[in-house]
Length: 151
Image (cartoon, rainbow, N blue to C red; front, side, top):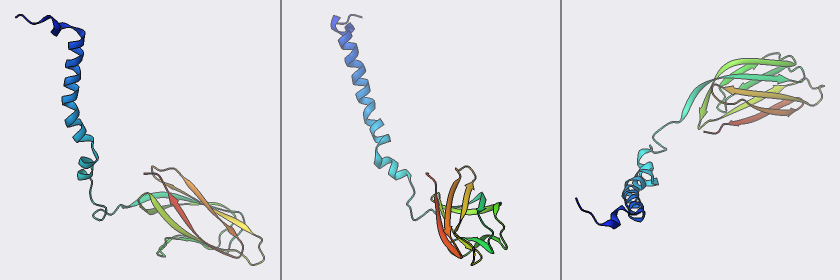
């Protein structure tokens, strides 16, 4: 087979490689473009992203409390201590995480003669990093604590 001399030059070889890459670029662009990815995702309204996740809750009280309760925003009790001595306490619980977020309402009742104090709540869900929130006050403390983790 006789072929022209210019086909075996480095310039021709480079041009052939670029031609093959150009032909592959079109299907690769279609696969990786946003329109194809959007077709594969489910609509937001169809799927409920709420998941029940086991977690460990750690409560740290700096002073003795008459009562401490942790509830979900809809009022479902998660944990209750009555009375609650100063120190650290922990419990295994199941939390509902929606889009890697949850809210817990912390209510603590301290004796009226007590000085200002703090309550620390650490939430450690399975396979997620622990996060700590706190509430400061005296007498009756009610605080909604928001926990969120990156998806």
